[in-house]
Length: 329
Image: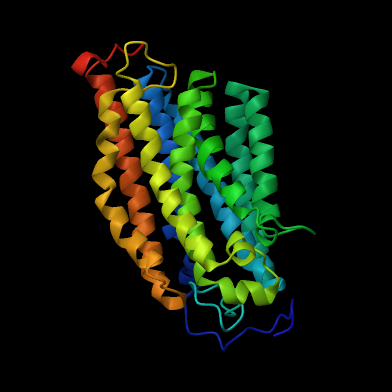
């Protein structure tokens, strides 16, 4: 297939239109949007600034942005020649001929438009910082695989994921409720974003050969698969180290501004879910053998966020005063 050739890479199977749209939206990836918004909302509860409508709007907006990004990626990767018959990942609907590039492009535009409408409420509540975040999120959602210098093709996909599925998502969710920034939100954003980076790294390890052939120079393509395996393990470790350090810091006699209560260390309950995927990645698994690792890492991300939220809520309920921790102010 030539780059941009509209001919499907294989005869399209019999799939209903609704099923094809589900494949294009990739609902299993949406945990990357849910996790940071949930953590940002739980932090707001912990600090006594929770605002339900703003948290809900942040969630809906984040989901629409990710859906739009997924749809745009489906079209743009096909046009750039990255989706070939040799690709090992989930079905891409345009390349498989299940939906037209025109239809999926319109779907992406509608998703971004819906995110913009939701964002208008958040801008009205929280002002210009949210306008800047929203515009940057929409722009990067397209530029991830679109434009003359797509981020994913230049090794910048990891930075995008860490920022917009980690630091910005958690901090932005917290900001629209509290109307102020928080160092805690930024650090928790790094922890949550690290697992989204880990998921991206598995994708890039799986597709390293086809990406290289298509000129998609991800970090794994640039630095090598062995480096990528260590990078995956380090990303997963970072997701646990930061919350634990924040929980321990909360018990110091001079509690730093980034400290949290002790229950946040409940996140360690998700650690057993990390051992399996790390072992498989470090063992040298490649290609199709990495497909189960994607599911395991996504499951780890969900449990990590769930336990992190539960810890924050418990600390709020306990008043932060157990085990000598100062009260939440």
